[in-house]
Image 1 (cartoon, rainbow, N blue to C red):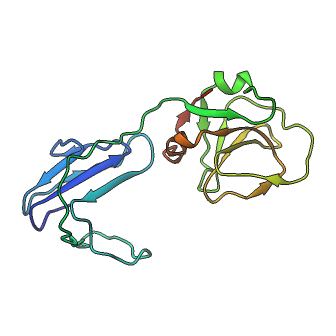
Image 2 (image 1 turned 90 degrees about the vertical axis):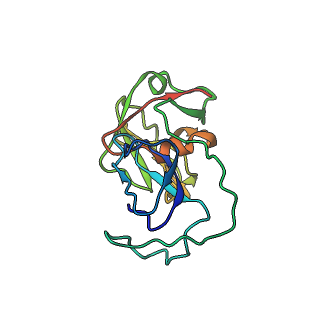
Image 3 (image 1 turned 180 degrees about the vertical axis):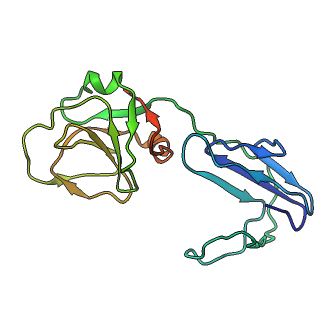
Length: 192
């Protein structure tokens, strides 16, 4: 990106390499360029500008050459804190027996290429899917065992009911870590 005027931006989320090398707060002078490399781990990075951007249509795609105009809100520029995601294990609250399966806590899982906002599919240890059951309420973060013994973490666009066995639910404080999982990546779980 190239600054058309002096500005302060903040980069947060998945860790990205920038040129020139900067921290969480980036001061750009007029006509200065900043190159942001795609993250090597995790999925999403967020860019904000002091004062905000002018409102745009949510369905408008950004393309090379697009100009984003500052809203010029009279906000005080403050030092922002970097929010860089880590590879810490994801906290899981037990669902059925008040105890998480040992295989869940001891296995490093791989994120399937078939993952999306509906659900993050994981491969690794195989789990007993249990008996077929009637559909029951489900929520984002629920960890379900599919009929083939693999796991799915329900995402924000996931179903509200389902019949798969549930073994746990991701702690609300770690749902941001789930959102950063990328296909081909790895994750681990822990008790809260």
